[in-house]
Image (tube, rainbow, N blue to C red; front, side):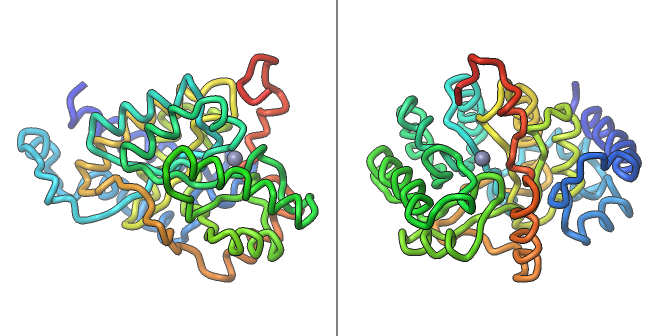
Length: 296
Ligand SMILES: [Zn+2]
């Protein structure tokens, strides 16, 4: 498939997807596309999100120097490492000179330490996603602290560097948990856009959720573990990286200080929601997984 053909398909699917979104919110995912500017720009001009020029043929024919990438996007992956899917994502990143960020679960990092080492070697950011992926707000303060501290310690051993960022499982956090993490020297890093990949919506839907919301500094949530398959995630990343680079985006790892993309009000809404429902990081499929899933 040529570049221009692919862009055409994506543009068409974007329109279909946006139309479908209006009636397909049976499972609310308020952060799937939560920026008001995202919807407005995507509806007004879906093609503008795909390429900065009206001539994709020219783009395809002309080598794009990396110095021409003036915007930045942060792809982030939760719940790994996973021996099946993480290597595929790492290979895609390596082949395209891109970096990403991985919020790893300690239990998985202990099983597959080489993958965390490879992430660090590639220049990817490795963040703390707790030791066993509990809802931290349901634990005592000391137990929540221990979940974060144990994962942090293993990451430091494997990468030679203590993580400076953490991400709450199930998007569940409160002031006590944030204080514990701060005491460990870690800042909470959420996301701008959730792909909902854990719900297995289809590769093209994952791609479209990113491209329709595309903006400079966007932090995108994927999962490289936590479910019985991440084939859609891997396929989507394989499509997205070249598309993003063609649109002028540097695909890079989160900086140590993280990216502040949400207002305090939005964080407050997230907090209340997390206490009453399971967020987009909930990957509910976990409870429905076959017995041989990697998380047990
Ligand atoms: Zn998670």
